[in-house]
Length: 113
Length: 115
Image 1 (tube, rainbow over the protein chains, first blue to last red):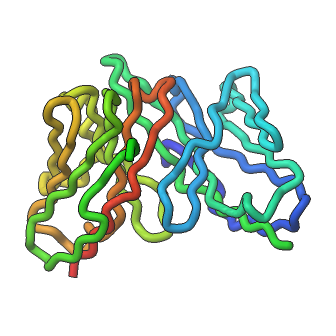
Image 2 (cartoon, helix red, strand yellow):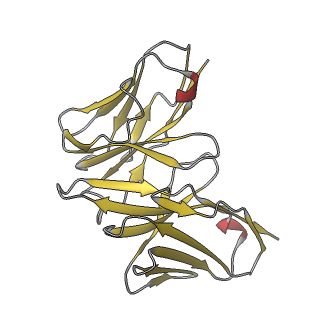
């Protein structure tokens, strides 16, 4: 089983729609969680951190469910510019304070006019 | 610029040759990560540095891969006796602290093609 799993998509939705992605992780000791965005042939960039209480940044809402070991990303009123691959990222911090940051394989989102 | 710098941006080599990829992190960033991304795939963790030491080398695919970091700054990833399956984009990222709270800043990657 992969340490971080995502539905690869693609999700193809019309502009203005609401779309949600889930991501599951295997290590219950995981400490911190993030969503990154990667445009085609570009490097990943941080979209938002995911906090235990859930957090919102404009049209984007992230949720964490530790009991079920999944995180989610909700995008409201989607724009053409939201088309990208969304990467779920989990930090597995070990006993030595070493920090192993694992990326999911990404969910591709395509917004159509 | 003040971002993460990687070189070369593109490298084409013949099977069996050694290659060296370089990463220059953001000044003052103590944590440095190497990932590999094959076409259409996700990021595969290779190695993590905190300062000059590598607490986690678990992602290195084989003993042909090695990495070092000197002066708490520049890191090199060396691949010996390259194979065609090594072809990928090698991404380097740095953060101010270990990844628990620090955002990762990525370079643009080194695209390696092994013929």
